[in-house]
Image (cartoon, rainbow, N blue to C red; front, top):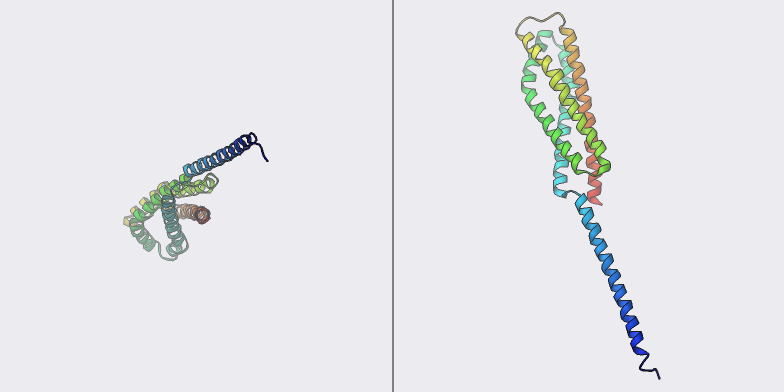
Length: 202
């Protein structure tokens, strides 16, 4: 028959074991909450990220499409018509097209920059490169194409200078640079959007 004196130690042992196990579970639970808290601080709001991502893809795609269409079709049409027709059409087109393109550039630049700040660290390199591409396209337009557009407007209303062919060729070169930069930025934004979309679905 077991002694009465042997029971309390076994009970104390079981109580200590239970307390240790409960304490370990509590520590694991606290560690899990801490890890989730750290992850939540590094992960941006999902709705905000999706909205910025959609705006960045739309605006960079619109910019790349507009400049790409102009480079492939409009510039070729410029070269196929008489010079006076080209100058008149060029002036009218830039007057209508200028505010739209520069506004699209602004939206694409801001949305891509915000996207670069929201995404994870390893995606910030392609997102930053996209921002650089849009900025390049904007600067080339502002300081390359726009001044020549102003000269073309003067030519359409008066005499055409002897070096007009050189200036028109320079405008076309600037147009190619800004178009390539915009298309590259669009591809990079799509890449970043696709990677962040896979993270959302996982």
